[in-house]
Image: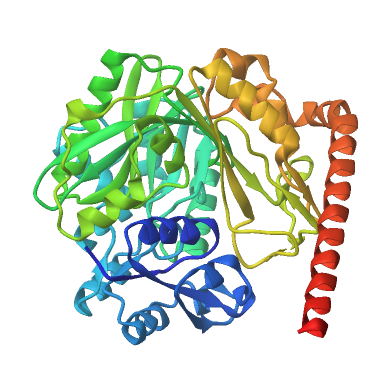
Length: 492
């Protein structure tokens, strides 16, 4: 096992990784930008290094600065978290070149899955079902029209180098296609420096289901169950759950076997996620995320595994120590991503200073967060405040617990999406498990938020009073303690 690990990330995921390291008696190193001098992740680690100004390209995406910090601290390995450099093959290769273990897959596997076109080719060659469409770049309108006629409208045009829903446009007819192709190529070039695009069949009401993979460096690969990730805005996940309401034991066995096959075919090692589109009883490979996922806690809660510890063990050369038959799913888990954003303003970011903060607790509730009262949500980075994770013996119980926990969550100073999550948890279609990637629009969730806010107003005001009284008690207690210390010094 490693003696010292550098975490090349920030916020809640950096703290999450460092907690796992601490439990394994591994020393930790954090890196931080000038905007994060007082951030929790910078204080939590055993050592901390400044790596640059606030903009991510000059700090958290600065490969040379991060490697320099690793060498100065004599860290043996780097955990990239998610986002930033976690799926950057150059970063993984540079770690390898410098003799620093990259806690993730080989750079070759990241490269294979980094291009969506290359990934589709690799999966088709391996016998993994892919969404009908092209496995080559689409360069001309004529090519696009021919392909679209073959798969049938509507079609989606995607940036090959894209991610996070950027560089995706839907064309519902041959008349729309030329303009959609041109605009998608322009967005791809602007966002990723690569105008390469391809075409896929567009499904009207699909589910987004992903399988968590663990693979050691000795050739053993297993899956540890699926996650339902269909509730999204702009192709970015907001609520996840495990297991999926659509899953049966037979379907899990089929999809899980394909996910393992997909990972094994590219020589994958460490933790990763194979993502599928599921529609009308059929499933198709969508992409592979070659890193830990934001939503990994729900898998941990239902399987009993610590996925970060598994990553560390695999990277240190240990074998998995478990078989597919050892994996059991216990109960039901959900995760709400609590972001500083305004759902009534198209989910626009809401940076600013958190003036009050009180997180919920109680049975079945877990909070992964990197903020505290007085913390400033920076405009330079993702707006996530925390991940609210709930567990119950069944789906009904976990929904009830999530409702209760959301009602207890107090965050002031910035606008959050907590009212959105409350609205979803009360929605009839959600309670029935009738989900799709268009759930928010289909159920007009945003339109129901004002009524939810009004219904909870009285309860929130009571919680505010409790919060204020609690602060007074803390202030009085601190004053009394200070007075006692002062008198002791006088008598001393």
